[in-house]
Length: 348
Image (cartoon, rainbow, N blue to C red; front, side, top):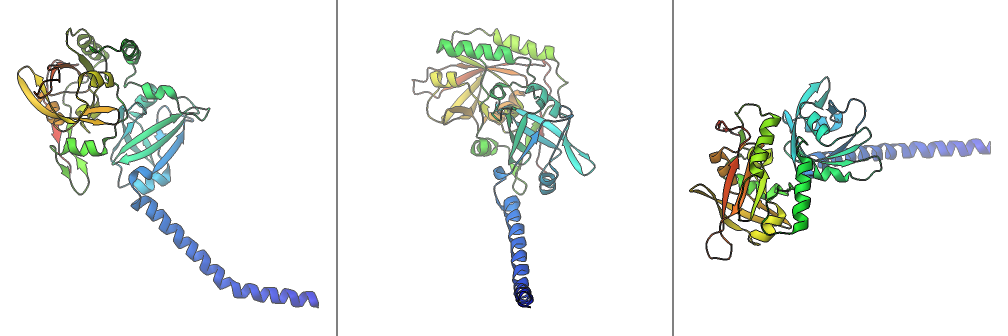
């Protein structure tokens, strides 16, 4: 009888606590909903990440996590721009497959150029719009060192690395080498470089340039590289291959650190770019160890019709010690000789 009385009192206590427990559960559910909303809709975009392990048919497509897709459906365009650890950019098309979306066209190039293997672990960080930074880890759980030295298309990577290694050891003032594409902290610089282009204030979409030239071949690329490499000069110079972030969007040109340290001003300032007798004013900016061309560069690209895989050789025209504005002579070596004007695409 005593045990029955104890059980009865315990039962009564539970009945009294039940409403409180239900209320606590509801509060926790509301908190969870609130936190989810804060994370996806209030937190800055660069707080949002997802990861993928390279398994199965990863070389042909990559499925975006369904939860990430559901939260980002309205924010993603038909393409994603992937910025690898090297600072270079790859564009991959998004395709709908049932309830999922996948990276397809362009993703294969990213896989090939980075020599991705089964078991590699990739972390995607959202930067803005459809731009994502990608970190690559191997099976040891550590970041792959070689991912920071990847060139687009991969076909000239070996020559580039040898050129940079040779010139770094020489420590010469009169350099002629490929620009390192380092990580670009473009948030502030991009806005400045694109003020001349305009933007849709509601969607934060920038104007960009679209190519109308014929498809380029490996032979075209090799010819442009060969001609630029053979350019002869007695003045300090550097050679830079044009990439999508230089000539189609973002419009930020990173200058080789060795050339910048030895030949350019250590202070941010306006400089002049000269092609033949025509001159353009552009902003030279220093941030930490980076030296970039920003505002004014987009106009230079448009008027000179620069495209990806073209090469520019920048030569120091002035010593930098006079009171005159620093001037760089620019020599352009095109992958495709026939010039077809770029198309300026306006934000919707």
